[in-house]
Length: 464
Image 1 (tube, one colour):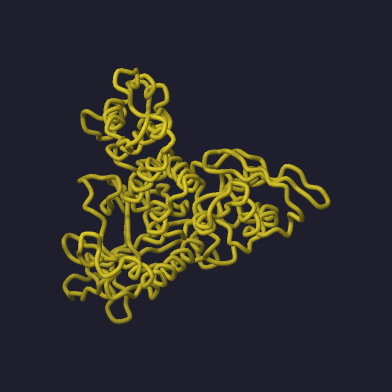
Image 2 (cartoon, helix red, strand yellow; image 1 turned 120 degrees about the horizontal axis):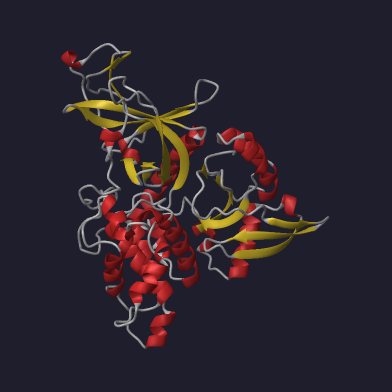
């Protein structure tokens, strides 16, 4: 892609096996199918498809769906297949990019040649990675909220957004309310939940065999969770005042409640990329190997997620990291993340190596997100005003609320294999170690950042 706005990442839950979004091509006109987050299709009859820009197609979709102006910023067009996903810039020409799809797969994925030859993208209308959560709170249009809700729900159910069991139940309860209506005491709600359980909870919490309760408990869940926990959360969903018919029609509050709950997840709205990291050495022979991870990047920071265990391994705000990448021409394509840590209680530089053919794209996206965040800070401060709703001064870089112990969204640095070092003069020394300055020059320079310098101690160094 030609710049950081063209976000390329790992396929997500909205990925379908659509062979093409172009159903027929003639000399002048073509029928284009654009897919929404709920898997419905918007057919568009367009002229001169090869020269049509993403901005022009975006406008046509908004007109068909009768969406308000905010949809221009809230959504973007994506090219998506089981192997790759790309957020398009307004100037991109989807048809031409579709024709170049195999070249993109060869450049940005490790897919086998046979899979590359058979793969074909679909055109999807999805949330814009660069749309701030604070602006999402200003949306009142029901259809816009519904589309955002459907996409967030898909990411939760596919475990692309790892959630604690309690959060899964709270989010699943809102889905129950949307799909089943208000909770009615005395009705066989438990049966309805059991029959459609995978519509309300992520698949890894719906394992059959020994039952949902056993599956949840097997992943460390507390007693009392499961179908009953979901049912209890369903009972607690608040209903708006008004008649039964009015409440049934008013789904917007439930869409909004779902999105607000998702806003608590630090990786909500991210672009996802595929990579691998080194496993910590184990055993007498110190065998490690690699494990697959998802790298989630948004305006808020970078998160590395364990694909198998469905939990966060590392979460960093931009103020807490430095980064760089190496290209295949230099060596294996790698994204490097550097952050503060400790080694047996001693402050050190920690360097995480993420192997990925998308390293260059991730690096560009980090840089672009930082630029957007810095540009948006003055505007966000003005919108917030001199004080918050509670009367206190605003804290634009305030950390999220403390998570539960063992939460899936907490970092697990002890599960990472990192390079620990300290820089002394012009020599990088491996450590049993400490930290001095960044190995990289690329980092966010903000006065309120927490990325600090640690002075080396001579007795803590050993030659790397």
